[in-house]
Image: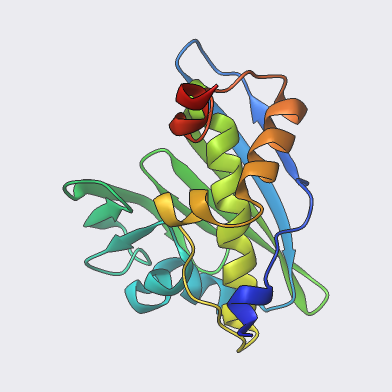
Length: 184
């Protein structure tokens, strides 16, 4: 068995939601990583690293203020994305996403703020949870490969995470996968 086949995400944790408005809410996820802020910063900004763990790809570094094309997994086309702040290795901000990195011992407390359509907030939390696990393993030199987008939703443990985050946030979610609703 490969490391990927052995991977099962742990329970939902380290997440909260700020209900900013009717449509979009802010998902806040916090993770303790065993790696230095400089190493985590590189994984958050370098296109080659992002292809290994993130639910999107970019055509240029996110490490400098400016415009890049960002393509979410499963999206038909790239989005022109403005990097508003790139204060290495502390703060990265682009579009509806903000990352903060804080040195804690020899590791990093990584905090993500991501505005998401409220109907999909639990899905986003489950997806980011798995992406953070993949990131941590990649940085430790034990890559299991990107698990994002529709691939993440098919992955063992995603359904459970989705339900756990929905309960934590007090939201109802669409039946997922859609076939389950049709079969009942």
